Image 1 (tube, helix red, strand yellow):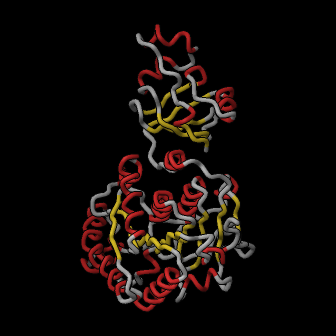
Image 2 (spheres, helix red, strand yellow):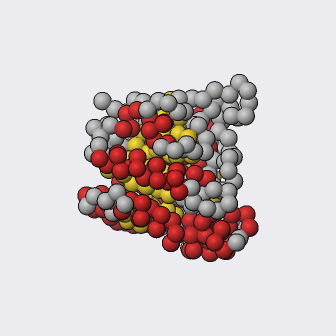
Image 3 (cartoon, helix red, strand yellow):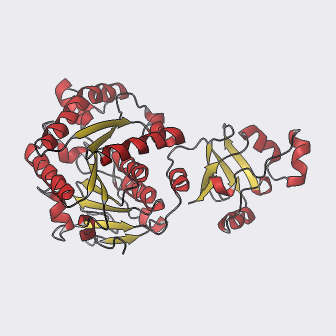
Length: 378
């Protein structure tokens, strides 16, 4: 029986492996100090989950906020990239200590993993991270993961821990992700509107669901709003992973939300891609874009590979093996995948039949621009 409601996330049978994401606004007050009592209550709940037989991974924000307070940096350390990197370098030490000391007090060992976008976008490094997580969990350790903001730049960072949590869940083969946030969940419109209704359950993230998202975060400390949470739900659902957004501002937030006393939104997956395709579909950074015609869109929907004949335009500079986005003539995302040709080669063969390619390229062509085994539909 699959996960069907928030209360199922307390079941060792249905949710044997959990990823719990903690936002900056929950961990750190506006004055830059740690919300110690709140954190104690959460760690107690994590220990209870382990006592029930569940494995737990924590994805924790807060390093920049902690470091900014210590360094006296304005705007919570987010005034510039240099400020954020310096704050993260200082704050990460304190953040690791917070988790390590509190878990140790309950007889639980903690491990720290700092990752960048590239660590989970590169296939080999992704598999290495997955192996490390598996070994730590087997040893009874609680991994505490954060983005390595001290070295990450705008081009190589997630930018928020919502999507990072979903990627970690994929790598760890988790059953569910719980995003503890400063909001109740997803509303059908701006939560400030009097007629706004909380959606307790969502089956698949669609364009209509994306249209309901508010892009703001209540505290100003965090970097992710509702849009990033929906993107996280999309990443999770590709691997058949349930994802919940719950209000974590109260003490003992898991019990309050999962016992049905509090608010929350549970996202149920519509699909379960194979491991490699789930990884590919969860990629955040594309090297370029291929625009295709309607006939090609239909062929991809039937499970076909992307052939040169259906390509109408090439955007970006990329090489063989790079990830690219695939869009239709109106700009709608259709798919993404790993290309078999460089951008220059595709410019030469776009719109051409397969029997014309050898003369254009000067060598025997490959079967497809993107083979169906290296392609995922959006």
